[in-house]
Length: 523
Image (tube, rainbow, N blue to C red; front, top):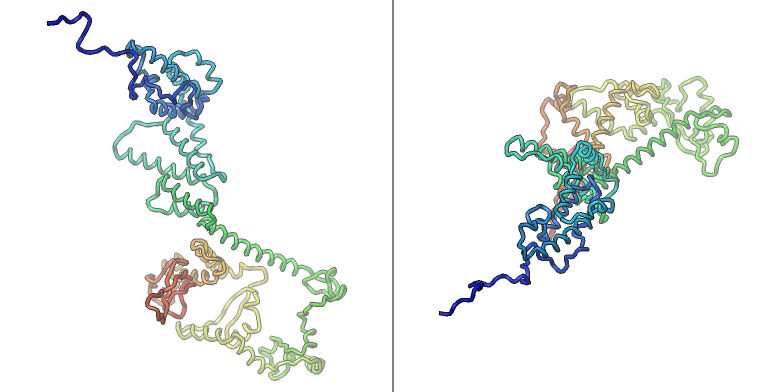
């Protein structure tokens, strides 16, 4: 046998120059060097230490160098043959850490030789979770507003504050019913904080989210709001902007109506000193400054030159039947003779009565007759304000013919007609709600008014001891099976369609209920 030389063995010893495996923490990739920045965040102090630490841990884990800062890979645990490589990697990690801090902090830690020492010093100095820091973060969460910024920026900022706050106030994890309730409460508070900071353009979407059952989490709410923001950004009419447009249009019409009322009221307060006529001052009196070319007088004396008919309500109930209109007082013959040759043709009381029957009196008499036939009652008295739709010749003749006493409230005293005023307000409130929730344009306000009256008559009221007006009148409970949402999508059947492959219905929008047919109204 051949003798084995002394010092030799069956296995080869590892060569110090043997390349290091890629999975070894001592391996440094060619792209990793001392001047490379592994994170984009710089440490400034207590205010962002937890954010910086979380980002640095992820960066070191990605390069398999976390053991140099958490104490799991020290020089004593490394083979002597690799000590030089450990020191080289340690210097690289130190430069990574020092390169991600501010200049003011850099000066006090640049002399440290080990990455672990720098890491532990930062933890001891800046990881201070006292009450002031928790208070500041909580205050930022509750006061953060969107203020026109993109929705994603607002959500990400709020989400980072939530996570930082949860890291400072983390509780021990339990698996029980109380822990589940605590988690649900935390999610609810985050949802309320997120919605409270949104801009007013999302009010309609917020209302929709809060009506959901069960309430969604913050991520689901953010997804719903993102779709709304996308619709607005790409020029489509989103929910909130659509309602805002409709509300603005409704408000503008209301403001115009108020301005016209104020102008009429101020004009009625003026009185001309020249002739004592109300409606203008002496500076604008046409009798003094001259009439314009397009002036049309509303005075009955001027109408005598036009050859048109003129009527006076004093003929109704006149004692001198067959006399000319306005001749129920002394001196009527002089009045008649003075206008006989003026070109104006007056009607007798009989002709005047026939004329009134032809002007919008048929429908009114039919309504009174229908009320008497359906409910076996007779209308004896009615009360209204002094609007011209109630105080006119047609209304006076109608009330006298049917034996109805027509009372009117005193001028500018709506309190005397309080029942009607309150009911009018109730109807308008319901009609506005129907228009706003459905998104129907304001031009369909009349359908909203009719639908609101239809619904109010069938709603139970505490004033009526839990009954509805419909039950008191018809002595039976109303049927609610046919009720539908105002403004919802509906389909109208197309009749007499010859093409077998053509549409059998067209899409419409529900606008209410028909009064004389068992059908819906749509457009």
